[in-house]
Amino acid sequence: MAPPEDGAVGFIGAGRVGQALSRAFARAGIAVTAVASRSRGSAEAFAAQIPACRVFDQPQAVLDSANTIFLSVPDDAVASVAASLRWRPGMAAVHCSGASELSVLAAVRAAGAQVGSFHPLLMFADPEVAAAALPGCAIALEAEGPLLHRLEAMVSAIGAQTLRVPPGARAAYHAASHYGAAFLCVLLAEGMKIFDAAGMSGDLPRKALLSLARGTLDTLEHNDPARAMAGVYARGDSGTAARHLLALEGVSPEIAALYRTLALRSVALAQEAKRIDRESADSLRKLLQANENRGAA
Ligand SMILES: NC(=O)c1ccc[n+]([C@@H]2O[C@H](COP(=O)([O-])OP(=O)(O)OC[C@H]3O[C@@H](n4cnc5c(N)ncnc54)[C@H](OP(=O)(O)O)[C@@H]3O)[C@@H](O)[C@H]2O)c1
Image (cartoon, rainbow, N blue to C red; front, side, top):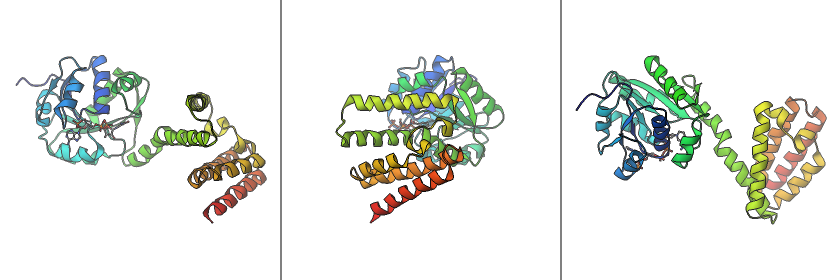
């Protein structure tokens, strides 16, 4: 077999991230030449969107067709997949996991190849939607030397921004990123449940909440969170807070508990930014903690 062309990229793992990233790379003129996955069906679906990409049943064959190999497999499979392959100096293995350190690629490094991580700060569901959203999103990179430069060039080729994660900080970085994605979904799901319990079901209340969230995100583009925050806790309005608690305790103890936790964090944020004085903050805390004790009794 002819040696892989310089800069050719291969993928092992043809799931949501692999399919979206490969489309964005191919559209940016980066050669994606090979793919293998656990099932041939996923690899074929991947390759159907990428001109000149070959499908292999054996992951090792991907290493013969490309120099930079993306291991876009679930986090728990990265180390074992990497260790099962024969790497050569001059090649690079790149994982896409947000929380895993580069040490999961120890077997690759031991074989004299380079190791890196390429983690897009994006929720991947539909591959086409994600591929279209990649330009403009941030991608956290970790690598050294020539591989770092190569990955930086790939980030910029797809129109994204590079974010550097210091070694050893990946778990904290990944935890923080949940506040902009998974936890945001949880918060909106809670709001929708409360609407539902209040007898406001259907599409309109859901859309109203989404439009409110969009407006908040727009405001946060130009203001820090403590300044952007509006509502009861930014105003120190304890009478309304008491009515919220009464209403939510009637919905469910879990919903009231999360509300109390978020409300206490809101009081702290408002006080730090001097939006409310100490006296208002203390009276809100007392109210929120009193209700907490009542919920547990
Ligand atoms: N989803 C996100 O929003 C997101 C965002 C940023 C980063 N990431 C990271 O990206 C990586 C991939 O996540 P994903 O969401 O794309 O997962 P996914 O949709 O579950 O895809 C994983 C793919 O890996 C394949 N696979 C599983 N075990 C394998 C093995 N032993 N050998 C070869 N292929 C194997 C699966 O195979 P088959 O389909 O062939 O069965 C599947 O195609 C993870 O490290 C994740 O943390 C995910």
